[in-house]
Length: 137
Image (cartoon, rainbow, N blue to C red; front, side, top):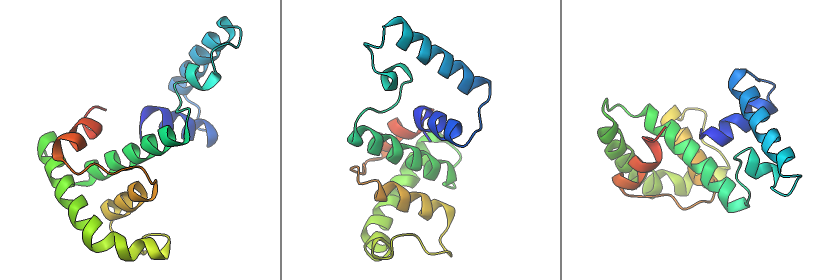
């Protein structure tokens, strides 16, 4: 997950540790200092549009898939993910999207790819773009 989504998910689930408390304090301090003129979502570094949330969600699932590839080095992980995505998009996604979810027998990697595709955000195809999204965290 990306940082904003991880933060939001943790707070929503009641998993509030030192990192979440620090981000909440900083965000609310900024919001109060602005007199409410700056949206709270901005102060908390959360996506502010449906498209922004879809991209953040897509990126979180792509990073999860990237972590699950068999490669050991970051660039090789990105190349492996690009290959897996091409195969998944062409062969697997057309059938799985009809069912609304990945089958129970699906690997964690393919389940993550399903969730990334389901966001509706454009899925990058190049190893370089995937590397930029996935290796930055």
